Picture 1 (tube, one colour):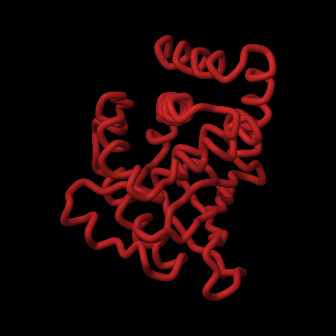
Picture 2: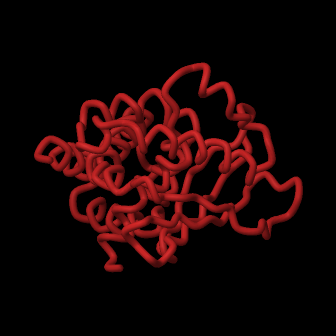
Length: 211
């Protein structure tokens, strides 16, 4: 699996850990449960939805964005993901730049990786691997595997979660030994060194508009 393919699976990983369709379904997920239980609950809910939604399978960007806005964001801390990806440059950014960068990055992830949603098939299954973290820790890694009918080899997914006042939040994903934040930190650093924080925001927005 090449590097682009691995990172295209990020959005699938986040989606498997965060989609529901109704407030009733969403309420069934206990964000304060044990981290492995939390991930398993939202994964089970996600797979049942993804397998039966023709709009998602057809790659309807508007529908995908609607689902992300309503049902993924409650489980993912995109601002923390952006902060860590920006690294030292986050401290130099104004509040307005931080908001703009977080929004642009979120849109980039959605638009770039939405195609991974079409990879879910009737044979897709999700399995939590044995937990190796410390009981009671507020920052943990939950390991899992996603198996697809069209891919004989399971996809290794590690979720990094933080316990917040509102429950667990996912903020980083490791797909086949490549961490999302680490990958984007290098890209962000190069762009900021060349054109500053505003230049990075503009580049992301330009890319979002062209896709």
